Image (tube, rainbow, N blue to C red; front, side, top):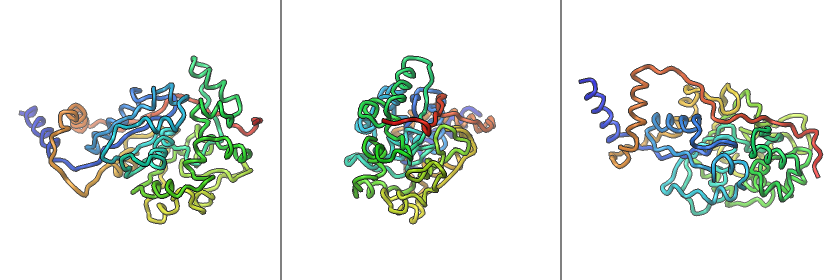
Length: 333
């Protein structure tokens, strides 16, 4: 009898549910969708929200997260057609923002939910360590000129490294961040697209030692020419001159500056429910649907059993181990 009751409940939940747009997750550097932390994170949010959730592999996963240029990453994503939310994990936010700002013929993005995004740049290198061919190649490239054509074309993180005391070379040589942050040419179309978001959710990790400074998750950064202090987002030129529409969104109440207590991409299930889940659920409408029910059954069964069994809070680590290396004392040429 209990089994039949559970089965009936599952069928009911799948046939009459709150309609929510699908969401996609873009993983961080040295990661891939099949890694346990990322796949479980995606599944949990899909279970809780009732929405289809997809982790979109960036090129060939772990390898291309380091070595595929962002412009190519953005152009190769064609999974969605009806609109969706984006969840970016660290470097994955650069891909997400590229989709929002640079792609003219893609489906609309409603909410951009950013976890530890290097939005204003980073002043450190996510050092890979000597643990295999990938890391040996990455670390060797990082020791070359960051803003040289060769490094910019072959190493993805170089596209968002911004050295406060080397702004001229950054604007001249960095291929990605100055474009999506509208720092040089002031493209009004990019600004309009970014400002069209319904919600921009910026989540900073208080113990983050990978992003330097951690406030880049909120668009905060060092002033040009100085390492002395970190400007809050609202005191940066990007905000005051409104290069990308961040000020427009903020004044409309659409920017959420949130923080969690963990290290880089270390988040608890309660923090996920509080800070991410509300922006994946659309309570404005309901629909009767059966087309996706079979795809969602395994996840729904597990979620339902978890609730019955009282599964406690978990801490998810959504990244593989990397270290951060300061660039303050480096010489650039």
